[in-house]
Image 1 (tube, rainbow, N blue to C red):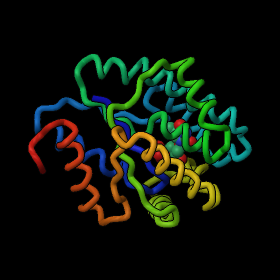
Image 2: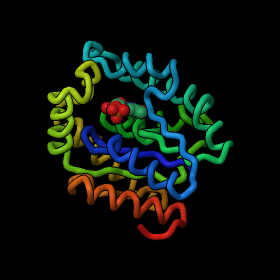
Image 3: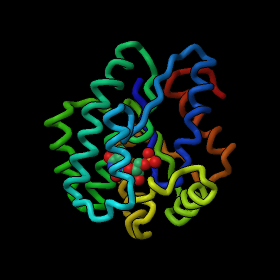
Length: 214
Ligand code: TMP
């Protein structure tokens, strides 16, 4: 089972991951937790480049190709082997992020992203995608709070520094993808209190894995 977690900045998907793992492992399910960009040694270097605010003027096409390069390596080194071992793969962002950030918000177009993926990655799609949805101003407020508290390094703030309209486009892009593929997407109200977000997420996971209700 391949599950991706998506959402705008500050949606809380990374915070929820340890809860998901604890829930699944307590029920005998082995998990591999990983993320994009940065799920491999090569990818960690790309992540530092991609999220560094010093690279403000990176061309959208160059940005796109680096995200895809990260993914090609990640799928081969981490995701496919973990799926072959029978693990539940929990991936903090995957291809929907490229469709929405580069395709929609950077305006490169959805078709270009999908074509590129088909060419270099084949057809590996998540079985389920958890979309942590919340208004962009709230997400940004939370993201900047994490930087202010030192919980994240400002060296990773290139996207948070984008204008509000960029983040609104990302949010709407995700909601449109969820409408296109209602079977795969599960929308979680990430504006709720953390306990409520955790509860919603575990309930969805229990349904997906056909485990007893939480
Ligand atoms: P995060 O791992 O902290 O969520 O940060 C990753 C950032 O990279 C986030 O701002 C979204 C962005 N991103 C893209 O623009 N395209 C992609 O394909 C991926 C995976 C992430």
